[in-house]
Image 1: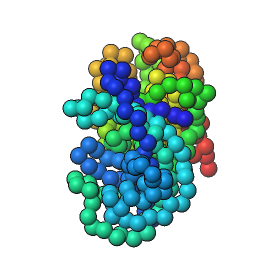
Image 2: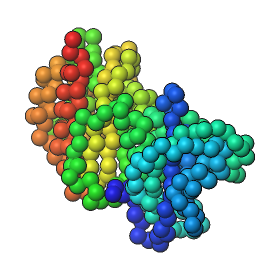
Image 3: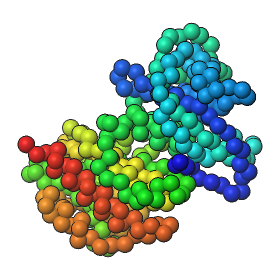
Length: 311
C-alpha cells in the first residue's frame, strides 16, 4: 500500500482511518471541500460502530449537504499529515476511497467554515494531503493524461513519498524543430519544465516554465501524457506539446538553473533524442541518480510526441 507525506520523527503519531468519496460532474470537474485547514476530498474519520458506507454518507451530508450513491470501492492508501501547530503531532491516516455519485441536496447547512466547489482536476494541486492529490490523478486525470513511462516502479511501496507535480512542454518551432535545454557544464539535456506551484493549474505551469526557461510564449497546448517516477519522492510529470506564440521574451532562470549554465537550443527531433542519449552527466539526490531518470522520461516523452505528430 503506498504511503505519502513526510514523516517527522520529532512529532508523535496519531492513527486514524478515513473514508472519502471521489465525485465528478458532467464536465469532469471534481468535488472538493474547503475548510480553514485547506482542500480535501469529501469524507472523514470513522466513528465507533459505523460501517464505511455509513461514514461516507454521514460525512457527505455534513460537509456537502448531499445524499449519495456509493458506486464502487477504489483503493486504500495512507499518508502522514501534520495536525494544527498547537498540537505538534502527525496523523497517520489510512484513507479508503470510493467512487460516489450525488443524489440530491437534502440540507443547506454545512459544517462550520466549510464550502464546496467543483474544480478542474488540473487545478487541484493544493490539496491538503499528497495522498488525495494522487487519488485525483489516478481516478480523474489518468485517462486524459495516460502514463507513458514508469521509473523505479518495482520500489514503489518501499518508501514514504512526498509528491512532486511537474509540468513540461515540447515546444515546436516554426521550422519544425523543438526546443531543448542544455547544460555543457553538467553534460545534461532536458525538456523545458519544472515544479507546479501550489494551487497552480498544470497547464499554466507548463506555459510559465516554458516562458521562464526559453523566453518563448506558447500556444495550442496539447496533452502528451505523464511520467511516474519513484525516487526520494513520487514525481508525477505532466507533458504537453505546444506551438510558439512569441519567442522574444526574456529568459528568467532560477539561481540553480543559472549555476548549471542551462540554455535553450532549437534542434530536430532526431538530434534531440541523440543529444539526450549522449548526455552522461550525473546528478545524485538522496541516493538516486536523477539525471539518468530524467533522460529516460524525456526520451519517452519524445516518443509520445512523435506518435502524436504522425500523419
